Image (cartoon, helix red, strand yellow):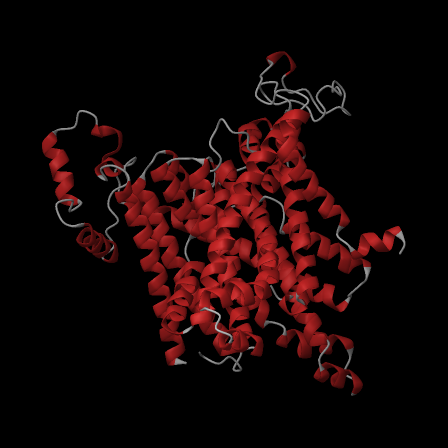
Length: 311
Length: 280
């Protein structure tokens, strides 16, 4: 398993390099990069300060050296200062991250706990009415724009029925505030889990050892859950990587709709305020999060299924 | 075949929706009931025709400035189709070319390409798009570019796998013995064999590209303002959701219908062309 993990780590490093290369070169393609760091203050700025910024960004050196030095800063955790708030980028991110992580975990649990059982159910009741309903739900869930779904839910549950708040997180962990954003975020993953679990279950239910178990008289429930489901769990697990990516992307949209004080909302604020250092920092932190998640899932995956060959 | 059976076997409804969208995109200017950009505050927030106070003049109602919602949706169809077709087209052409070359030549090129594709899949795509928009500003070409950037790796993997299996077939060896050049073999003998997969990935990818485009426009990072856009219609009108739900409801419904049809058609193509791809 050692070489397998090593390969995945190298893959993660390549991904982060690509992300950093894109983010860095973008800051150098348009005009003087100093404008991205000084912001609106650059009008009527003291030339000495301007020069100072040039030195700080290593603009006197060749571009590849600039990239190397910038990367060195990033690796030591120095993402610079946010233009709008003048605070350290990493400090801002650290402050908002828990809100996003909490929302993401709640949505992921919801998506899994709804999608996987419904997928199993759909497969074991193939061709019946409920199967069609669930598949319809899955197709719908993978096709609606989530920001629109969120608005419709706000309209129904917050505006008309008045059951739930329409936005913000509130103090501490108030479950009421989590419901709408988490459901909106969990919708797409639930649909994906449903579809893939259903396909995997159908395939397994069709195999010889299931027929044998049935023939030898094993009851319906153990056949489904002990024999079939255990073997059908790998495809949904593989999907989890993509689901997690989707969730992180989804938080950007959902947090904007619900005014949720997390990283996604922060990214959009940074975009609107042209806060390059903050958005660049967020991109790299998200990149790191992706890589860590894919690595840990890969390891779980390899542990669960000894049939996987590591090449 | 009874009509019901026909409906079951062929994706008639999704096909009708997609064709309607394409036709609307082309002839939109001639069929809009009102000028989609002309504001008329006297009729602002007129509800759709079946509600009280609604009129068939404004079929799906009007927005906060009194612009006709239906006309705006029709006008938005063209931009959406343009952006999506250009982005998916570029992505698929680039992806197919890279997949063909990597699969055909193999070796170091293949290794490097596949490492990059694998790495590309775990990039924080949406955030990188936001950085691009922050630096280059909102624009149609920027949008097409970033969406194409998201969609090329999907085709590479599948086209490469299929190329690998096709290139060891006898007819390819015979073509080589007959003196065909590498590029001729790739274009005339291998490409026709992988085109099915290309169609399937393109159709299946379209839904996601439409959703991403809509989300970007909603966030203010997609289609730039003077152009009509479904995503931006929803974000502009979201504050009136309690007073005039129809202004943001209908554009979203249209997006959902189009994406659903795309996904449905993609599934259908896939099952028809190659049932072994069912896991996709």
